Image 1 (spheres, rainbow, N blue to C red):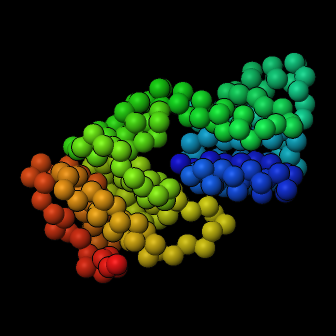
Image 2 (cartoon, helix red, strand yellow):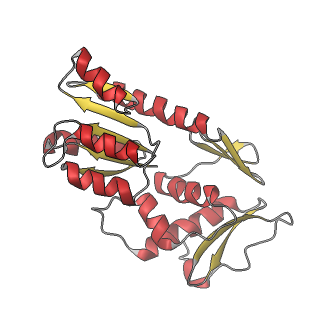
Length: 238
């Protein structure tokens, strides 16, 4: 799940980004309002953490421009201005929550979970494809009714494939879901994650097919057969 952190204090940004990544989120960090506005116009995010005091374009303007485009992504404002007028202005501009600095990381994490649950309630709280189920509120996969153990990046890949089930998802799209834009990405990494997911889905009626030159397709195979379209080059072995 990809978050955007907009914070011009480098120490705070680095600290928050590191802790959020440890909790399984993919986090893009920017310190400039114009950069944030550009990213929000071209990239989908599950949630935005937005400071108000930013260079080049203030956080309030970033928020207003975001909402003017009809985007409903949850936004949590971080600011040193804890006045009532400031909170009201932020909420009226379209923010979903407001957290004054300084704050405890546990509180921010709780507020993130609340906003993600609310976003899930507005869409579909549970998604199913054959033996595979995903509880959007708890962000937990189940296979044949049992919890499916996944690493954060395996989780991000499978989430992308499930929400696009029946459609081809390119390697580029999967890379965007699991890597921060500052990460050095290796295209072969996606193949490894897909291979691991195939191993974990074995014995179920859900399969990941490879469409050469296009990407991957998650589908429900009622026969429970093996993935005949798997590329041998994507089996890295033990």
